[in-house]
Amino acid sequence: MDRMITVGLDGSPESRAAAEWAAREAALRQVPVRLLHVWQPVPEPVVQAPLLGAETLQHWTERIPREAAEGLRRRHPGVEVTIEQRAGTSADALVDGARDAELLVLGSRALSGLAGFLVGSVGQSVVAHAEVPVVLVRAGEQAADEHIMDPAGIPSAATGFRPVVLGLDTDSPEETVITFAFEEARRRRTALTVVQGWNLPPYYVYSLAAGVDPREDAVREQAAALTEALLPWRGKYPDVEVTERSRLGSPADHLIDAARDASLVVVGRRIRRNPFGVHIGAVAHAVMHHATAPVAVVAHR
Image (cartoon, rainbow, N blue to C red):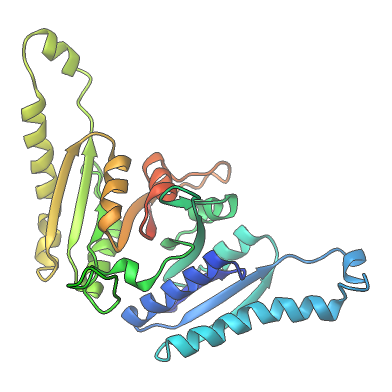
């Protein structure tokens, strides 16, 4: 795998925001950025139309990535930026084009009037089938959004990063996902907030009927499980401050709430070989659509 970050680019505001985020991430990782522009072949009758000839079509398909690359090079002079163009179906081309990258970044429209994303069918398909981590960046995302306010309460990219947030299931803690989150926190020199949401077991109702409330025991058990799961990682990353949040209730809701103060949210997705359907998982799906911070979906086996 080459050390590079690939960005899906179509000229939209959300894809431009994704390219900017990718350039900032590339500076942290000290790797190049590749702008992957996917275009679909136009039917022959359209190409031959007087106002949409082959030369005009070629001009526009080349102009989008060229201008985006020029802008990134000006704003991020320390980052190498390359361009690749592919023809075909967007989702398939993005998944295939990112196989040799260490990260794929996509843009996502912000929900009108609501906080969060609107992840379209292409983005969902890419997330469901890509085996490299996929980061979703909403339109309008700015560098200052990932940093804490300055002493005067003004957004600034010159201050420290907000924490990275990791959603963790202690029943199946995945090494790939945990490592990604710790590495991102270490690159940003910021803290890692690990969020665990859980529900009471089915026998809870029967315990109440018997006059026993098992909630306190469950709270202690879940918190202890989270601490135990993170012990090896605290040893591997002693320079990363870790905050543990074990809460009763929906894991997705707790992650979406924590995302309000995060620079990045990390969730996992199990790789499934079945080609049919969108295999993302309920928690990752909800976080993708409603978290206000960029979301990294990390595939694992």
